[in-house]
Image (cartoon, rainbow over all chains, first blue to last red; front, side, top):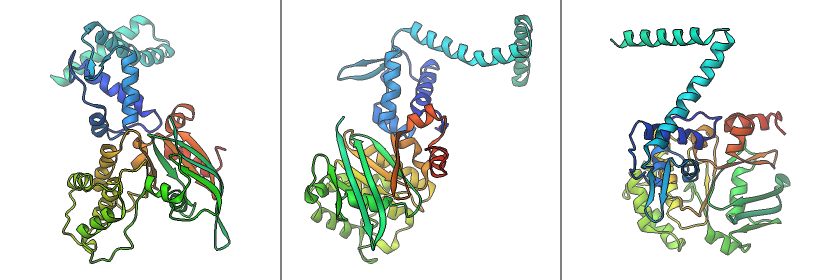
Amino acid sequence: MEYIENIPIYLQIKDYLEEKIITESYSLGEQMPSVRQLALELAVNSNTVQKALKVMIEEGVIITLRGKGNFVTENAAVVEELKNQIVNETFDSTYDKLHLLKMNNQEITNSFSNYVKQKEKKFE
Amino acid sequence: MSNVLKIEELNYKKGGKKILEDVNLKLDSGKIIGLLGENGAGKTTLMRIIAGVNSVPEGVITVNGNTKKVSIKENVSLSDHLDGFKATNKISEIVHFYSAVYQDFSITKYEDIANFLGLDMTKKLAALSTGTRGKLVIALTLARSAKLYLLDEPLSGIDSISRKKIISSIIRWKDDDSTIIISDHYVTAIASLLDEVVIIKDQKIRDLIPVEKIQSDYHLGIEAYYEKVYLGEIQ
């Protein structure tokens, strides 16, 4: 994994792991690799992995079972909420930028709809 | 978290020339710390002083609560560039030497690391590439069971594949409560490993700062921050 050097690495790892959970590389209820395994896979210090996991545990995305390790939550609603949060964050900056161009909501919706159609054509 | 290392009022001169001046430093255990500074800034000297190799005429060094040189040596594993060995020495002979000199040297741990790094016991020192020699130095250093590991430019002159292997072995074999100080010019290569950085400039410690603070407060990477400190743009 390539890291952006001026953003705390634990945040980048958190994003990476959350993406894996949303895309079901780690399924609901599945045991996560150990901290050291993740550290090796991601080529970072174990302390950094611990920190990323700590935030995810606080958010309820990961559950710690004492003596057993870390598991992805079994609650699909938590993962869905996480996904919505990422979708919103992704749209936030785009929406603000288009608003600055004095586009109204209808124009923004139309242009995004056109954009998606063009994308579909590219993949046909 | 306890202090694995405490340096108080350290001054060091060599041949009348100041090498380190008024050094005070406290490091918590369990972390990986980058020691950054230009050539000749005093990084190697500082490591040798911490390890008890160079005597300290002025100042106090405490490692894991110990101030006596003998106890400090038992707590610190300093990477050695193996210049004291002959070119004809085989790796097996060097391993034997380490095992005889250091009571905390574990042959099993050495073999695990050596296996991972692909080191061959029968090879002679002269036959090793820079990368392989670097791997040997790391395996020997990490095979000791110390509280504090000092890695003096472990990636210097080493190709990128060997560099990745060395970094992996540091991650894999570092105990949770042991501390590692790494000095290097290749800041970017070790950046993802570091919890904190110490910057030495003009014989003095200019900064001890968590990497996260550099990224969150200054919105910079380690290298850019280090350059700004060196250029005096950050005091």
